[in-house]
Amino acid sequence: MQIRRLCTQDAEDYYGIRLEALQMNSEAFAVSYLEEKRQTAEKYKGRFGNDDSLTFGAFDEDGLIGTVTLIPEKMMKLKHRATIVAMYVKPEKRGNGIAKQLLKEAISTARNLGGIEQIHLTVVSRNKAANRLYTSIGFETYGIEKNALKVDGTYYDEELMVLFLK
Image 1 (tube, one colour):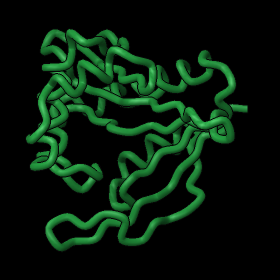
Image 2: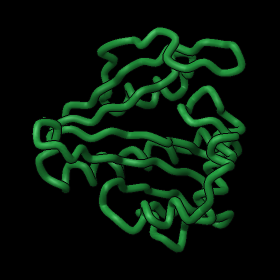
Image 3: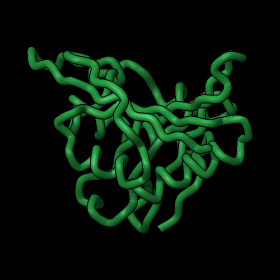
Image 4: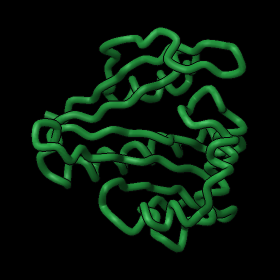
C-alpha cells in the first residue's frame, strides 16, 4: 500500500470514492450525496492544485481505497490550527490500519508545515470505531455538539476533538 498526497490527475478517482463515502456513511459527513453529485471532478482538480487543503490517498492494487484532508487555517489568529475532514476508507479495506496510516501522514504533514500546534476534527458520537482510532492517536474530546447533523429525520451528535502537537 502507498500513501501520498493527491494531485490533479487523481480528481476522477477521488470524486468516485467521495460519492461512495457519502452513500455508505451519509451520517458521517456534512455534505449530502445529492449535493455532491451536482459537482464534478473538476472541483477537486482545482483543490488538488493548490495548498489551501492537502488531501492524501491510500492506494493498493485496487486503486484509491482511502482518503483524508488536512486544512491549515489561513487567518493570522488561527494559523496555529488545522482541521482534518473527509476521512474515509472503503468498507472492505477497513481493519487493516489504513485509516491510522492516513491520519499519521496528515499529522506528519501538519508538523512539517511549521507553526501548526493543534489539529481539530469532528466525529459522529455513534461512530465508536472512528472515535477509538482518533483517541488512539492522541485526539481528545473537548465538547459535544448536540444534533449537529440531521439525516433523513434522525439527529446525530458530533464530538469535537483536538490533538495538541506541542
